[in-house]
Length: 290
Image (cartoon, rainbow, N blue to C red; front, side, top):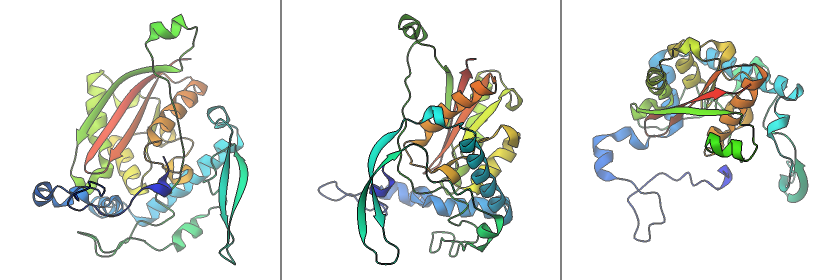
């Protein structure tokens, strides 16, 4: 996913050539928040459910610290394939851009030097929304980063893996999706997770490891606490706030990391969740093989 190539222009009625993001006017009339910007929904979640700016900044700091510690301990090494690529480097003084050859060997979005004082100094970035005129909570420090990235997983039948002499990391046991109000799309997991667990006769306490996409600290905190998840089992090596959140990559990245980290911890069950712009939550259950 190349976030640098994503078109952030707001949706509008479909043009004759079909080249712009379509806006369904009938849907818009019925559900005005359906196309609401995700950052505004994060502001709404913080305001509606009392998630303070301080709590969000503390969570963001923890994410940075957990990723830094995990990288230092080599916990991401086994899931990253070194890749040669080119970087566009901008000279901050002159503005000149040069292209440099490099080899990527690790995620480069982590800011291990971050302090709580740094985060507190950042100003809220949102304004001019449908419901929020001036944001109070979401900053560049407590929201996920715009990052490019890629991830891949191989899914196959157990018999096929055995036939090929492969040792699977785990098994995909189930999946659930649930809808929620579009203006609080970030908390979609609180509806998807109970549905998933009920289908498999499990409780939150039965899950050894959780990965929830860290789009915004506000939705991460509320979802975690609403579901009653142990913080020590939740995004244990950081998440999208400190690693980056290429939209189409995060699910695969979280799943791969859950399986590898779960094996290190001798965990049995893990759950990966995500929120979905427009008003949905999704959750997948994995059995981790040791």
